[in-house]
Amino acid sequence: MSIDETKLNAFVNKCVGDIGATLSSILVVLGDRLGLWKAMAAHGPVTASELATRTETSERYIREWLDAQASAGYVEYDAVTKHYTLPPEQIAVLADESSPAFFPGLFEVAAACWAATDKTTQNFRSGHGLEWGHQHPCLFQGTERFFRSSYIGNLVSAWLPALDGVKAKLEKGAKVADVGCGVGASTILMAQAFPNSRFWGFDYHAGSIELAKKRAEAAGVADRVTFAVAKSTDFPGNDYDLVAFFDCLHDMEDPKGAAKRVRETIAKDGTWMIVEPFASDKPEENHNGVGRVFYSASTMLCVPHSLAFGGPALGAQAGQARLDEVVKAGGFTRVRRATETPFNMVLEARP
Image 1 (tube, one colour):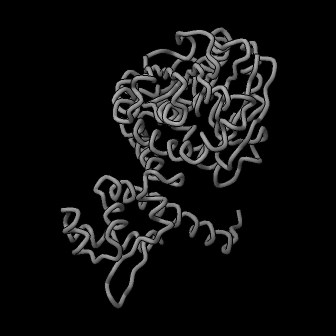
Image 2 (cartoon, one colour; image 1 turned 90 degrees about the vertical axis):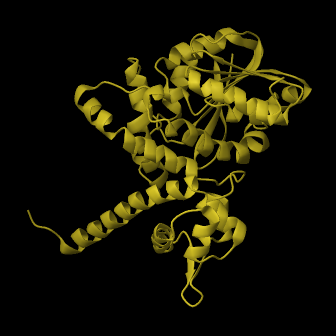
Image 3 (cartoon, one colour; image 1 turned 135 degrees about the vertical axis):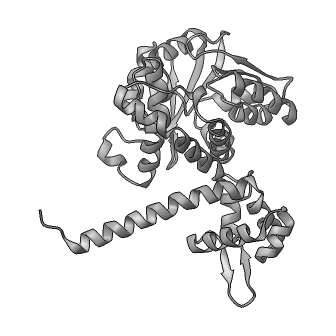
């Protein structure tokens, strides 16, 4: 077998870049947990000593951390003044939790995937799964923080208005079920935006529901939001004007059963909103940077959860054609793509 030295060197350099990104991602999580990003955003250019003092951390560790971030292009370094600066764009991505571009949550998701490596190795051999609730705890917070940024940027301003007649119903006063709500980010955002409507959030994971209740209280919407432990196939209620599934249908052990339950509980003129990771129906069209993230997360998180319950393991890159089959198997007759972003597609299903 002959080796093309130019291609070999190019691939080695790619691996070096990927390893650097992998190791650097751990430091992003540390910066988030230690408040380093927020401190840099709040105080402007800092020396290693100043940042260590402000965050009550060790200067020696901080100096190494800052140089790693400068090497990665995450911070800027002034060799004359010895100051490190977090530019405005990086502040939006790393330090501002209200930003629609906030990313540290996704780095936490990556940390959870690493924590499950030993279990996943065995699952590759056995074909068994690993349910969501048995993953590392940082997964739950990381997932909520990452998706919340997308919801902040799109849910109220673009996704809901793209659904036929839904925004008007919500403004007047509607009954909404948020199934697979996790710790309640999407439910709470909708409740804050539409004070005349009532919301019910359901998730099978009891720990997430308990945290969702606390967050609803803190957000001042607990009087209009009810969180309860329930599966997607047996959640209670009826005559919902809107049922929402945010980035969860592809994970489920029984997605067709979930679709059937939505059909049973939705109002005659109700709407099922399904937000899913953006994907083409052809795998080769997903072989890009975004697809790399989604396929990797799906291998470690989405497919294992479904397989843990003997499910079909649709995966995070299922594509609309497969999702349409699931929706129609539940009794819905009309499905359309209402809108999309580079990361999500929003489907609207009607009875």
